[in-house]
Image (cartoon, rainbow, N blue to C red; front, side, top):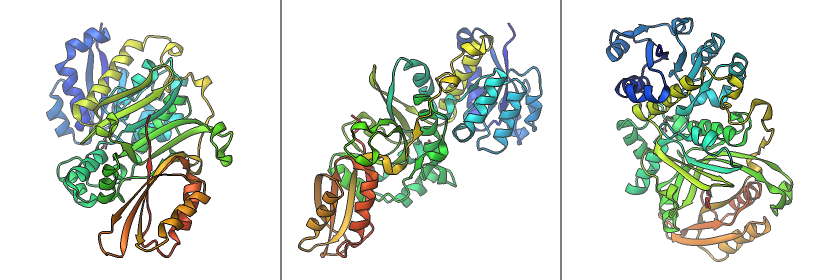
Length: 448
Ligand code: HSE
């Protein structure tokens, strides 16, 4: 049978990996897919560089539309990134009846609903394994491997750049800015690192995971997003002394607050979708995921806890996910579209309208660090405010302040409470005269 004909839109790092792995493992891949898979065309603005990678057997063009209109092409692989031209090309490819494989998390997280609807109408597949956690087959695991389960929550280290920075800050005791610069020099962080360090990249991925886990539409605009750029090395140190590590987690959690104990949210049902730095007990496996590695932890009712670990970026790890999608499409393209695995794991007419909860309704525990005047009664005032706002203290640590003998660092760990209550308490505590600097607040997840 004629090999499946693939057109690559963009041949950067991932495109090159895809080309090379397909070539190197072509026999194995063919035995699995039942047919050869061949890159027949590549579109890239830098045609010379593209030709140097793929050689003379592959047609190289500088206009992506030439691939989309070519009736010989079965699958279009979009590796351009971003929401602009990539969206236009993906929509045109669907319109032209092509199956699409993409590594573009931003595109899926923001425009997924429109893209999946168009694909459903046209009977084509949109595959995006490479969009979340690179080489870890997490979409496959959630959508197929765990299909018997009711998913309770997902917590993932899904951005390698920030995990590398946090690991270095902890290992070497260095400040964020210094480590970021090193990460850029080493090629772990981009020249403009905003999407990574401010949590946007992780939120794109968490949004996709939430949709597949709970059968809800992708709703990136409702995600709470907080990055690591304001994190201070001393908080990483204090967390460690208390038995925790700080990780940037993407969290998607199904909640039913009928028995929450907080009257404001009694009876609320929904999904928490949030990305922020988080204290995680050092003894958890996920807390020990270091450097640029990714890991995703899933809590599900039948299987319990599972953990998926691997490289979340890079040429061949991401190519591994792209090619797995190519094999899936090859195997399923002749199947009745209604019998394929649904894009978001649940049948399109069985999607849930569970709402993404506002951050005020989230319940979690907290690490607080306050720089306070070292004088009688300060602690009592602070704990008094926490008590009147319904916040119970788990542990308190006092350490000499770094700059003055009259100051002290007060570290408080709380039990789980409502974010709205914590905001109220922090406003009051911050206004105390004896609180000398902005309060540091980092959420804490026990992941048990
Ligand atoms: N920039 C991402 C990361 C890789 O640092 O994990 C691709 O998603």
